[in-house]
Length: 636
Image 1 (cartoon, helix red, strand yellow):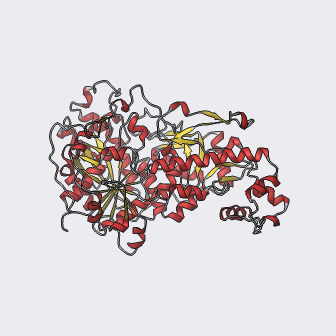
Image 2: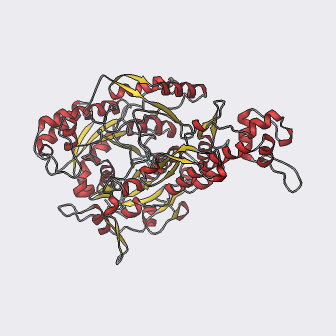
Image 3: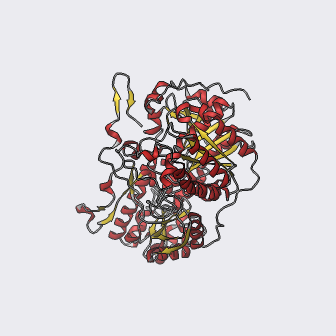
């Protein structure tokens, strides 16, 4: 295969400079050149400046008959404060495949939220010499998808409160007259979205005047139970004081006061819908089916019942197209969607993966990242994302570091702002071997899906050969197809060539079909318990609230959906402090909720915050603009 025309070789220096300095040292090629290298014509994308373009969904239809490339998912061991470098590995592997192995490759990543960018974690463009550029554009507004989600989410929130207000102050007849006003000829009619509600109610009449008083009441009055509303407003900023608020305190909204709150935008169900949709028509249906709460009679109330499903789709019509960018070494990247990896499934979009698999073709590679550890991100990738996409991965990568494994082996706590304990920077093979129980469980869980598992160990200068060999030996003993030492943070794609070779071999030698953890016709509880067992739990304990919600969702006909477990990412168990591979614990389910439009039930294990807070010293202290050059400085 001829080398890509956009590939460029990096000149790496040591020690590795700050991420933003590396990103600013490389001049990106015009995005049209990246598109051309993928055989995309100007009709296939819309330019957003010089370095970004929206790839249109029509590409999927045009390439429908062509074969897919290899599909690779990147997960990790259970995360620690020391970091494992999953995004960096994803990018570094793709740079190795594209710039050093002359393979067609596309990286598929989630769009980062501005919450962590300005808050505690920093951006998500990779790191060191394995990054997506321009880094500042990737981590900030990009092409506005999160803003579109914010607008759509808040339109639906406004529609809910407005409908309750008008129903509280009007008779059935007045509501009907306003919902179906007469035209200039004095004739009343239903519009398209109203026929969706009529069908749901089992009313086949087509003219408003033909409805009986009882049918008018059923159609016009949603009778939303305020205590059942699950839909909250969102913004893409960490703002802890908005976690709980009251609305309706204005003098004109007397009697409409209720308690609600804000989530961060990436926690919106609309973000999960964007990530799991397969077409514009599918997105329209999913947005319309989103359940915002129940009527007082216990029936689910949807966005289409409120008449807003079409308007939400209009706000999202451009957001459905993934954004094309590039790595430091000139390989292509599709950035799309960024659902929370706790209450949602934490994976980039199906449409980006589908486009990418067609563009790379047979022998090419699409590498996508799953959020958090493999027990959360990879599990949800397999059981939720692959179910809806129909796509089958050949290889799953599990990323680990010696330092993180030492923490899982019982190493001392890591406190932000304090120097690392000597245990993490001096040789301690026993501590590493003890921590490999965490890696081993992730390997066996992931292998059960029928994919080949490759372990990628991100090497630090303080890691000893004996420690690295201990991880490799433990990984192979646990059933990994291969285990590879990587230095892509320091060397770019060159440092991940061995990983690229291992991944290619793993993809070419896969022998089993994709296997799910549970069938969809299991009950909600059976599915929850199957996932809990994969964590190492001996049983599940349900609160009274969880029991009530499970009964309600089963009664409403939603029990056939997959499960999206919302639990801490820091442990297999519900207790973040329990490192390694805890076993024989009882997993407590505090509550059970549903994202019906996205298409999953999510049980809550413990308390999940959907609106992060800012630390005492947020990342924004370091972020500024060089007014002489116009360049962003201080992003991490």
